[in-house]
Length: 140
Image 1 (spheres, one colour):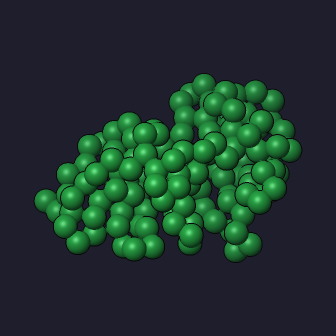
Image 2: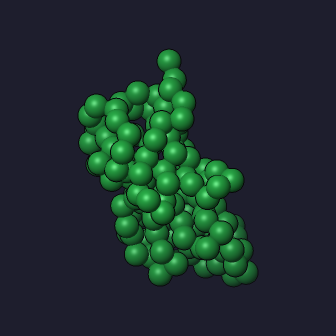
């Protein structure tokens, strides 16, 4: 095999061509030339998406709630949205939003779109520059 990873669940490609992959309970980097896998960030981020500036965004969580985190190119982890718990669905400050994220994507305007399955099925928009979250679609 090209590279060895354990229990991969999410992956994306960095601007330099390397891969970032959820690797069991953390995020690893896979060198695109050699296939060497090295630890990247100590966070259980199972859904990953890479921004054009090289920062990686990941969804974390369990049935009791989750978060969206940003991983710097050096592997430093910062919470962007979510409390890690479930609660009443609300818009406002992103870090105070109870949620269980399931997927991430970037919108054309640079905001981060977050699909969530709890506390209600919804698609949310995180304005990264302002640190706010708003609901753009509710599920049934």
